[in-house]
Length: 147
Image (cartoon, rainbow, N blue to C red; front, top):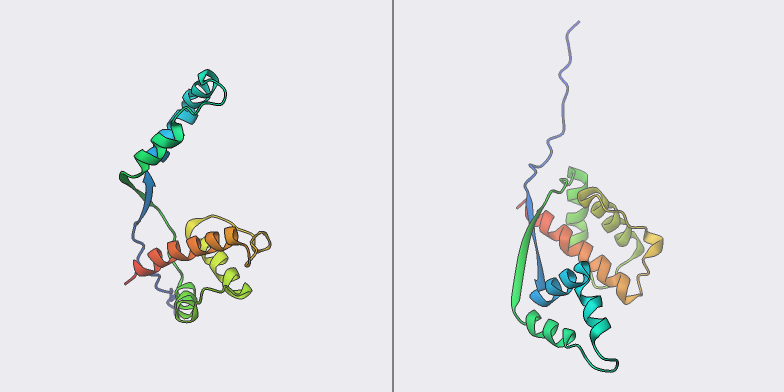
């Protein structure tokens, strides 16, 4: 009896994706001072009703553009996911439909290994819109890496 050859689906080649996060230097300094307890100490010793100047320094330091790069390992789209996202990109609008949100959540969960529940996201809420938009932007980066 002859052996049959096993056919495998050809997956797209996985490339490391570089995702740039732009944050201000003031944000970094704030996180460090909060983590080390310096911020609490300054707040304790600042006379009540007076400004310690932290917000002003943060704003001033944030005017300095500071970009850090992190390489994030992501999973590849399967052929079906790639096709589904290609189809979605052709029809996407600023108004997200529930089926589009479901697609984005499923793709995002697969690619970035981060789960969101569709029931937790309100399509009409501004905060949820930002989360969905961010998912879409990050998926676009991965999608464009195949080109």
